[in-house]
Structure formats: C-alpha cells, structure tokens
Amino acid sequence: MRFGVHTGLQHTTFDALRALWRRIEEHPAFEWISVWDHFYAADGSGSAHSLEAVTAHAALCCTTRRVRCGSLVYSVGYRHPAVLANVAASLDDLSGGRVTLGLGAGWLAAEYEAYGIPFPPVPVRLRQLDEAIECIRALLRDEEVTFRGEHVTLHRARCEPKPRQDPLPLWVGGGGEQVTLRIAARHAEGWNVPFVDPETFAHKVRVLTHHCEGASRDPATIEKAVNVGLAWDEADLRRQFARIADFVRPGVLTGSTQQMVDRVGAYREAGADWLIVARRAPGDAEALDRFAGDVLPAFR
Image (cartoon, rainbow, N blue to C red; front, side, top):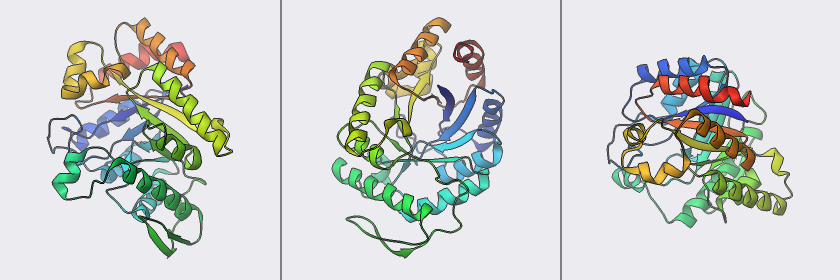
C-alpha cells in the first residue's frame, strides 16, 4: 500500500498550502498530494471561500519535486473535456511527468446553481463523465480526434504538446456501483472513493472486479484508492468537517495509534493500493507528522 495526502482548498491561502505541501513531501512515506475542484467550500456551510482547482494544481506541480500531483476530482460539468485534456498535458509538463488526472460527475449542487452551471440528474451527469473521459484519453493519445456523442462533439480536434507520461493516468472518483465503477473499469488507470469503511471498500472492489470481467480488463491494472479522514479526537473531526462530520465518520481514522494501524491494515486487506489522508484547512502539519511517524512505520 502507498500513502498520500489530499489537501482541501477552502479557508486557506496559497502561502499556507505551499508550506504544507513542502512539509508533506519531506516524509518519504507520502508519495501523493492532491487537490479538489470546488468553487464553494465542500463542508455544507455554504461558504464560497475556496481556491480555484487548476491554479492550485499548477502551484502544487511547481512547489513539489517528488510526489505525484493528483486531482480528486475535476468535475466534468465545469470544463469542456478538451479544456481538461489541455490542462492535463500542460500540468504534466510543468510537473516533469507527475500528474494524475482524477475525474468525476460532480455533486455539490449549490455551486452549480449559484453560477448558473447546468446540474442535470445523476444519470445524465454520469453519461457526461463517460464521454468526457473517453474524449480526454483520445486527445492525450491520438494525433487528432473526431467524436460525436450526446454531450461532446469533437471534429479533428488536437491536443499538443502531448503529456510527458504515456499514458497520463486518468482516475475516476465515486462509488456508484452500476455506472461509475463500470466507467472506471472501461476507461481508467485508477479509481478513488472517499470516506467509506473497509467493509464497504472491499465490497466496491468486488463490484469493480465484476465490471472489469465484463470489459475483458485485468482488475490489477486499475489502482484502487480510498480517501480517509484523519482526526486524533472528536474536536479535530468537528473542526475539519463541520456539518458533514457524521456523514464522513465511517471513513475517518481516529483513536489510538494501534487503532489507526489496525484500520489502515483493514483497508489494505480490502484491496486498497493507495490510502490518501484527506485533511481540511487549517492543514495542521503536526497531525500529519504524527501519522507519518507513529502509524506508517507499521507498513514499511
């Protein structure tokens, strides 16, 4: 199992984030840092204080030297797939070939509504995701792409220069078993789901494996990741996650060091290739230092 940190962009500054990213990268056990894609804070508060994702992703690429620079996840409803393909290719060059592009169908209705962005029903958003990842993959790989779908049309479209990685890893985010996991099985190099317990994660891995069989795909070729919270006590959990604290609780590491070791081990047994710790601002580097120093040595 490999380990990373997912850093939220709400109620923080780039100065604070850059300091946090550098400190995370000082820990050899952390091999990943990612950012999210929201215009409003994703804590149910309705606050609009959240840094923009592409800008933050670029800053992450420039600030770090070793870790993978991920996104969990870009909402395909906010940008045309060709825009995302060009973003990914440029970020990959900027990072020296360390970018992972996570994609999702979007869920925070309030920010769509506030900005007048269409927020269709879930089945439609999932069809948008399916077309988007197919088009992005083709644009990153092929010299030119023609595509006519329900939501995306490309005519001899090009994306140049190509990314340094071949292929640049595309991940799908979400836990929907009928459609999201099928999209991951068909198109993705990785799959991520947030805030589920080990038993639920194990079940979804089995569903993903089933979809891989239907797509004639070896499930071992898909990296499987879980986002988990990290809270050393109840006050820390409430401070980070505010109104959604009870919702995310099943997927939060908490308790003693041994309890955390046992919980991380349970995710590994459930099939997780990556465990990505999701910390909300303030970043509290000391909590990550403690996790890296006390918990992660059990997995080296």
